[in-house]
Image 1 (cartoon, rainbow, N blue to C red):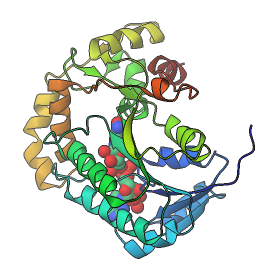
Image 2: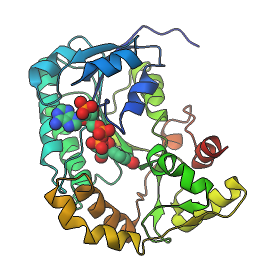
Image 3: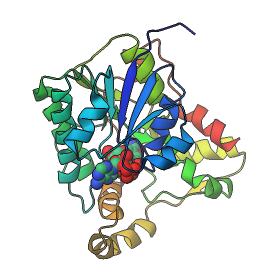
Length: 297
Ligand SMILES: NC(=O)c1ccc[n+]([C@@H]2O[C@H](COP(=O)([O-])OP(=O)(O)OC[C@H]3O[C@@H](n4cnc5c(N)ncnc54)[C@H](OP(=O)(O)O)[C@@H]3O)[C@@H](O)[C@H]2O)c1
């Protein structure tokens, strides 16, 4: 491997259920990694070679400590409940304020596809607002816009897939674009940090191709060697919609996820722009076929 200057990257918002995969993959990279964590003990144990700074991403002083002297910050904002974008945007405002105070060189933000306009869904609209804030901030920034994470859509459903069922409450004609989440830290280090590249815009970090749920059924069946049938939207999505008053009253994360599933059911999740392979030809991104072959073997 080529020897690079040892860069320091701050990882913010990477200690959650979905986002810890970023932390795991960054910890394998030839960089100094500094991580902000509200509860550091478990991460100190799991990542003994990583610098863990105790603090919250809602506290500007904590953020300034973690951002001081780093070459770049890799930032994920936590999803709000009840389809409310405010907590996510407020968290980003805190990080932007601290980044300005710490003279941060490069703010790398994990965004989503389709941030060209507001769509009435907090998960998307928060990222639309945050990318605008970044563009106006005067900071150097790059937004990595993701499709559906392969690791989030398929990996938790593997035991059902191995029994022939793909549990996904969306109609079979809906078409999706996928992102290998684990590739993102490798891309960030190789193509942005080591190459000293700041894009000052967003771009789509997605694998080649889009897949309808029907095509996913075929792909899973082919890799499993036996038929895999997707559940489709009925009756699962209807049941989830009926449970919305409960999700809202209990402030459950499904109060944001169910509106997202309804959107997916109607529009799928596609965006007609260039993929990573077109923009960064030297970067080898994992295809959906490769990911599924690896996890189902
Ligand atoms: N593209 C996709 O397929 C996909 C799938 C799922 C999620 N996402 C995106 O991933 C992002 C994270 O999703 P998530 O929220 O479900 O992730 P998560 O994995 O629960 O992570 C949330 C992170 O934010 C921190 N956090 C949460 N609430 C906080 C608070 N009140 N104060 C300070 N820190 C707080 C957590 O820290 P602690 O560990 O200390 O709690 C954790 O580091 C969202 O932007 C979401 O849109 C994308």
